[in-house]
Image (cartoon, rainbow, N blue to C red; front, side, top):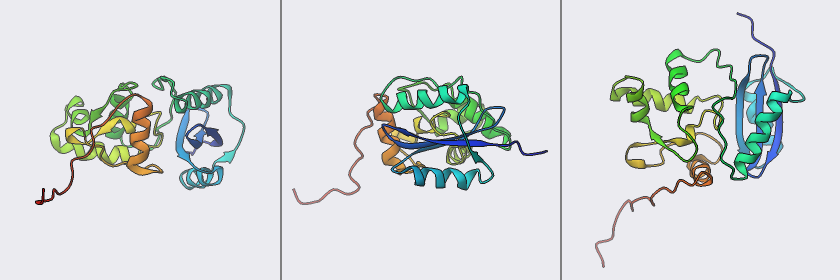
Length: 187
């Protein structure tokens, strides 16, 4: 199968510089914010090396405007954004589809997503792998997936778990402070 031509664009938001890549089907990649346009472009180009810089289509312009509003704190639903997930594992596609139904200000867990797909608890690891390989974070809201017990869990985007917590806070989700790893015996 021939690879479709991709175009990308880097843009500023209140959270930093984001990047988006698309083809004639839909969005293929999204880069969460970094501190510089250069870093965002470098991260995006690493994932879509054949993409050419270009001017967003009207549909992509709408997605960019929605991303900007999201990082301004507005309740945004990305579930209708058209994606091209060609090349993704079929089970990952099912996970992504289920996750797109987890709306603004809501969270789920790796295990709950696995269960919702009719898979056993061992599939929670597959869910974690799908989150780590998510080509369009935010649009497929992997930041809304927590570890068991409501713990933050991992986040492979720039800023790691801190970025995940910040995105959840934008949506009004407050996570409990982590338990101390060790308590002193001296009182």
